[in-house]
Image 1: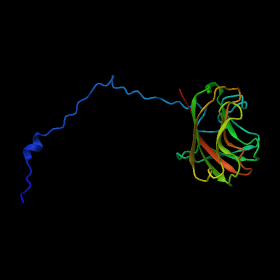
Image 2 (image 1 turned 45 degrees about the vertical axis):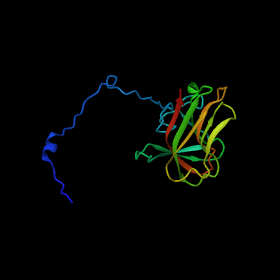
Image 3 (image 1 turned 60 degrees about the vertical axis):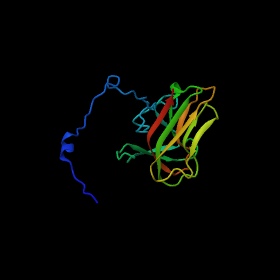
Length: 190
């Protein structure tokens, strides 16, 4: 067996060279996605007030009660807690008609969790694809738990649109259940 010997002259003569390259002026093009919701992270019907579903801010149904702020997934005190008082007219929503187009791909997401009780009715996310009965939804039963989770749906709209275009969050949730919402996102893929 031979011996391994270190060659000190190799260590002294080997150099690493770093060269800068001009790649289009040093700019990298990134496709920027803009969240189209108003006041997206504080899904709060008091800090982003509206005149109802005909406006662009956050709105709550008649059977939804705002409880207050709670700890969000990022550790801030910006999540908002609500309680469903009845399974009908219970929701937090935002209208987005000006962004709605036929034959267009959209993505909706929100962080949600249950803070009291178990939801056996309702949906975490419910969005009309055409303003009518053609809806996409994530059911609350089996999904809305006491752990923060991000819920996302992606879909493409149909041929025709009408004037009733709204995203509902925690819609028609079982009466007496409390839930927290944070970080709503809406993206349109052009």
